[in-house]
Image (tube, rainbow, N blue to C red; front, side, top):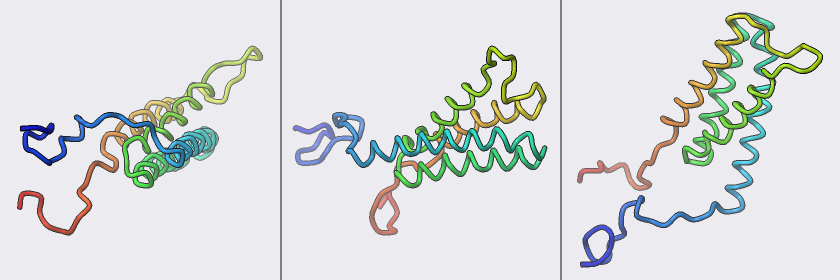
Length: 143
């Protein structure tokens, strides 16, 4: 018997396949999604405090749309992680205080809901978004 699946001529499971580097198009898509996540984070940081609580909900909905949109566009969980990484990096950089003493986020509860809620939503979207689905007819998997 040969092959990772235990039978001859059948490919093994996806975990047994060697890792390949992403294609240039996919790498460019991930970079673009990273930058889109950064833009959504900066816009959300401005909107969430302007119209509380509606602005907070709008900012978080924009973040979720970006994360899930990336996952469905690339058909992978990496597509959700790229904008989530851009979002988190931007939000962390915006929370750092400057030598002048001012920073973008206030000390209110809405800012903390935006920070921690957005990070939790990024993890949820990356975990649940665009899992592996068979590409075939509408037949059931067990048959």
